[in-house]
Length: 122
Image (cartoon, rainbow, N blue to C red):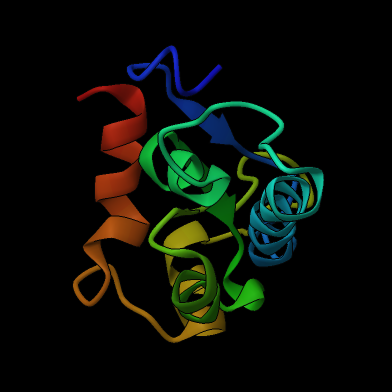
């Protein structure tokens, strides 16, 4: 679907994001496995599954998930997330997120602003 609909954008929120690096490795591995051992790919794709995610998906991350580590493992897919205004959300979203992950909005503009703007098309 992402191959055919290049302008389609997905935002994944309220699901945490620590699972993403393993999912991307698994998608690429399974895709390669079928081609290597089955003699042909499951589907004809122009890119690896991971590359479609990098091109068209962004995910909300909590500070305790260490978004810098996630980005190092999976690419720059992550956005600031706080679950505010829900009861379990951060009381002071930006300040609490910075305290948890140690990265300020100025040091990682993609995490705090650019990826969200991209997702919303602004």
